[in-house]
Length: 244
Image (cartoon, rainbow, N blue to C red):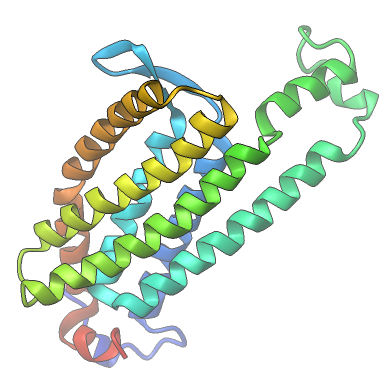
């Protein structure tokens, strides 16, 4: 049963509350990507290849962006992307402050016998949360370029198809923007950070991009489901109210 937004008399209308849920989910996924992305794991079907754990969370941000773009429009999606960027910067500043403050001996008391002193535990903490400047630069540049590219392309394809074929704008915008993201962040990491030769770097980037394409294609049913649920909840007035 749908909820008619026209009779929603709450201080925060349904379409604003739902937008807040999606925006908060987007920011959480983005912040988690910067936190967990330091770990490498064995790629499915190719254990000899390493993937960053950021691939588990970052592609989901494009899912959220596409749902918000479809329902709330480009301006709301752009604001969400900017909000995600600002919150990522805030998170990075707080994390660096947490790394910088001196550890107290009480910190390691009974926590982990592998780290009997606060110095050892501090080193373990830094190994997880300390951020490489080169990787950070690449990540933030890639994020801004890819997300804004995704949102622009989504609406470009929407105009081109006269609002039809959601699957096309979902996959088309994500595939191209993920290519932008992969090229920027990995070029900085591989060629500047690791000093790889061109052929090796491109080969690894191509493999990473293939995994991203698979994830993007797999989330298409979720985009349809998310848009359907939101429109049902918002009722008949979503076109008038949400896009205002």
